[in-house]
Image (cartoon, rainbow, N blue to C red):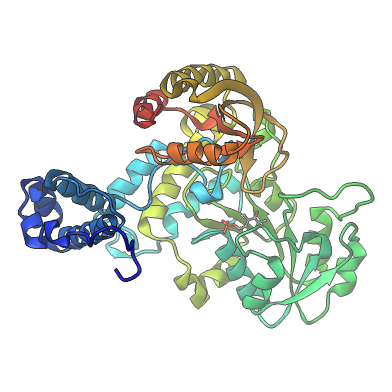
Length: 471
Ligand SMILES: *Cc1c(COP(=O)(O)O)cnc(C)c1O
């Protein structure tokens, strides 16, 4: 430690326990038994090296029991999952960074059952080889009215597969108003070039006419495409041909019309007081030859890209070698099948499908839960903070608009004390909530931590862990 504190005496490193002595400490017996020598030895070395620098900074040496305890905590942290369950109190219901749609218990149970050997590509009645898509294909046909269906890893993969299969080396006609970026590096023009399709933009940002599509069609054209622009609106002097019109133009040109719905909800959300989201069934009825949509957005299932449409085109998609690279695993197929089955009974949908339940949760229920947990938080944190309830709006998320629709209530936690340094006190508060055994993720706005209670269902699980927060 050259250049360390010149005035103090050289720290006495000999007082640090040796690694093998530390490993023999009775406090480590359980972690050694559960997790084995290699990780416990690694963590013991970490702790000793940390203590070495603490000693050089002039800190006191903890007792051997305390040192063993530090090792246990490090081992336990290492051996717990990195994919931690959290409370999503951000106010965004379908939050991409927090895993999008929460799955229904039926979907979770289906994954558990599929985890062992399962008839994934095996027809149990004939004993012959089967097709994994058949696990969900009939359900997708039933719920969308399409002729056929296939599934891949996510909707970005679905779009990629469709473009590559139907438009490789050929032009894909799309309106300039629909060349979207949806975040996470998904930009339509980039996906197209990676899929080998040649982008043929038509119209302008705000206005595209049917004749723009018609005039662009040539022997070089592979397909016409419509992309649902869910995450922004173009207002004012705007025009887009209807879907049946584009479908008609594609038919005249003898090429497929593909509609990428993005979220794509299987049922009419307007019936639940939510903004109408185009359904795959409507898109098929309006003449799309292929429709693509996500499994884990409004649909409320696992991450997947669902593709429905004309049987001959679906057959082509399945024969593309890319399909093999993008295929779904059995766990996802199991969860997807169970989720689709929930749609079989629309009367029970808001009860059994968590996404829809959260999106339709009565504002009075949310206000009541907010008021109760505000009380619990105020009691725990004492006069270090001011806690109150704030009327706010939740967001659907995953690009669905509008943002001012879902009335909700947030618990607002404002650090007390002088204005100076209030930013770092607020950060510390947010960190403390994120450091709970099941991290609580809120959002910071106007000098306060906001916990939107729309997605808080297990109230006692939330309040029980509040005791870990220092007052
Ligand atoms: C979300 C979205 C995608 C991508 O779907 P992922 O399931 O996230 O891969 C593609 N197109 C549109 C219009 C979308 O909204």
